[in-house]
Image (cartoon, rainbow, N blue to C red; front, side, top):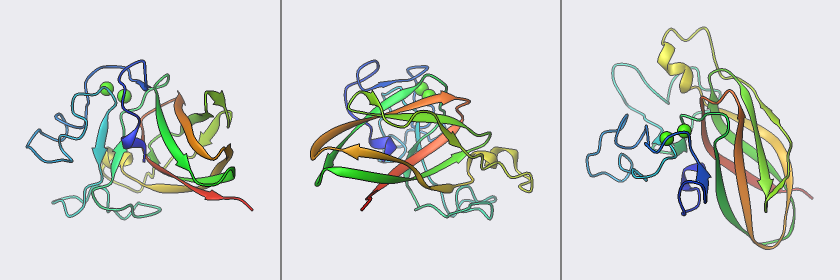
Length: 182
Ligand SMILES: [Ca+2]
Ligand SMILES: [Ca+2]
């Protein structure tokens, strides 16, 4: 889950364009709740999927390719050059394929390192922009699952993934779902 990127701070476990979290404490006012104050002091910009909102549905909208889980934390407000690490604990060494849950209002490219080495090269992310949606702001909330976006090799035990935003940005990144390839 991208919003649960590693602890450590700017320049250590992530790089973000500015030190503000534009989700927690800004879009989502500080109100003492876990989700609205999620990592509020960190530069990576985080928010969460919102359902049952009136008058217009936000993340449970008719333009989703896949309906995400409710209250799902994600990394948003991405810009080219940003990156973050996620340490994963792998039960079995081997090759894994990743499904990726995201939104992208204009497409873009990302890449991933495994243990400090580029593992994917640039990955083209298909835009989820849909001109049929009359609400401009909701172009950031059309969720899609990119099935088997890439494959990587993991060793047993701890592996560090680094997610790089390469071009265009303006994406919401929820999670990578890894399944072993046999
Ligand atoms: Ca920021
Ligand atoms: Ca950012």
